[in-house]
Image (cartoon, rainbow, N blue to C red; front, side, top):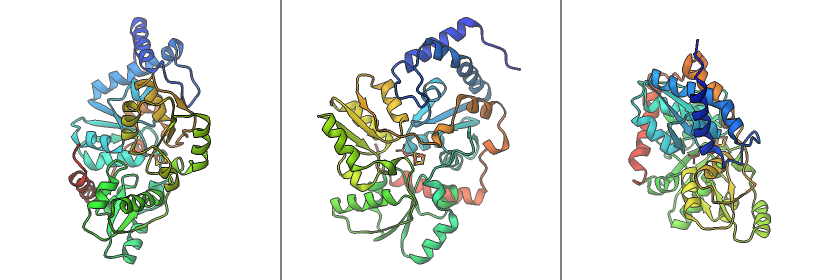
Length: 349
Ligand code: 13P
Ligand code: SF4
C-alpha cells in the first residue's frame, strides 16, 4: 500500500510543476496548466520519483511524450540518438522508456543488464512496424552487394539484419561516408528520398534502394500548407524533420532531428515558427523557449501519446510481463553490432 504524501509536499510539488509547465499551450488534451491542474498530478509525480529512488530506476523520455512525463518525472529527455547514448551509459537497474517500443528495444540492446520496461506495449511506430526481419532478408537476396542501413525506427530483428543503424541526426553523414556504392535503406522511404537529394547536393554518387514505410505523422505535411502559412505570417521560419516528404524539406528553412530542430529554434530570431513534426516538440519549446511564437501545424503521434503518468507508475511499481522488453541473446548481439557501428561512424559533437 502506498502512503499518501503530506499536503505541504504535494503543494510544493504542484508549484514545482507549475513553474515548468505554465507556458505549455500545445497540450494533447487541451489542458491549461495552472495550479489546480498541477495539484491533480502532483501526488503521482511524487510517487513515481520516490519509486525511482527506491528501485534504482531512470526514466528516459522522448520529446514527443506528454509534458508532465518529460518535466515531471523524466531523468533524460531528447531525440533517439541522445536517448540511445543515455541508455548505453546507464548503470541503473531499471530503465523506463517513455517513448515507443523500438526505442525501449534499443535501450535493452545497449543495456542488457537492465530491466527495460515500456508503459504501453502497444506504442508501436508506423515505420518500425512496416518491415520485419524476413522482409529485410528478402530485399538482401535481391541486392546482395548492398550495404544495409536501418533507420533506428526499426525493430531489433531488422537491426540484427542490418550493417549499420542511423538516426535522423546522423543519417546524411553516415550514408555519404559509406564505402559502398549501393545502399539498401529501411524502413523509411521518405527519409531515403531525402538522403538521395542530400547526396546529390553533396556530389556523392550512390544508389539508394528503400523499402516502403512512412511515418503517419510526418507524411501528412505538404508544401501547400507551408505556402499558405508563409502568406499569412511574414518572416515565418518553417522547421521540419527528415521523415517529411522531400518536397516539404525542399521549401523548409531547417530540416533536422528533433534535437537539432530545438537547437535551431532557440538560436534563431524570427517572429513565428511552424513546426512540421509531432506536437510534443512544440510543448517542449514552450517550456524551454517561452519567448518564441508557434503557429499551428504540428500533429499528434498516436503511439507516443499512449504514454501516461499512471502507466509509467505501474511499469515501475510492478511491471506486467507485456511491459518488460525481452530479446533473444543472439539477436540482441547482432542488433548491438549494427548500433555500435553507428556510434563509431556518427560525427562527433
Ligand atoms: P528523432 O530521433 O529526431 O527524435 O526522431 C524520432 C522520431 O520518431 C521522429 O518521428
Ligand atoms: Fe513513429 Fe512517426 Fe510516431 Fe515517430 S512520429 S514514433 S516515426 S509514427
